[in-house]
Length: 91
Image 1 (cartoon, helix red, strand yellow):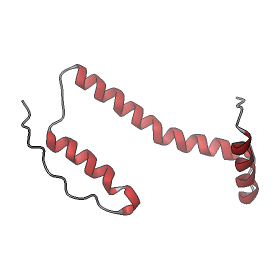
Image 2 (cartoon, rainbow, N blue to C red):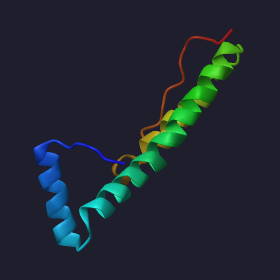
Image 3 (cartoon, one colour):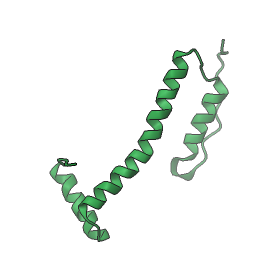
């Protein structure tokens, strides 16, 4: 695989590689691995969610609040603020 990088990113990669004693190829591989480990599950979940929505399966207010709370707790290690339930009832 061959990729073209903007000059600034190429220089930053080379600097990081030098600081860590790794090759630029290893740094790129490591970065790509981390990115794919993070993004692939997101895309898979999104596709599942779209499939469920297409089938008429929707999350309730409590389900949505639980997801937001789970992600909010990951921000800077601080728990998310309690969420107020939506006043609209699900039909």
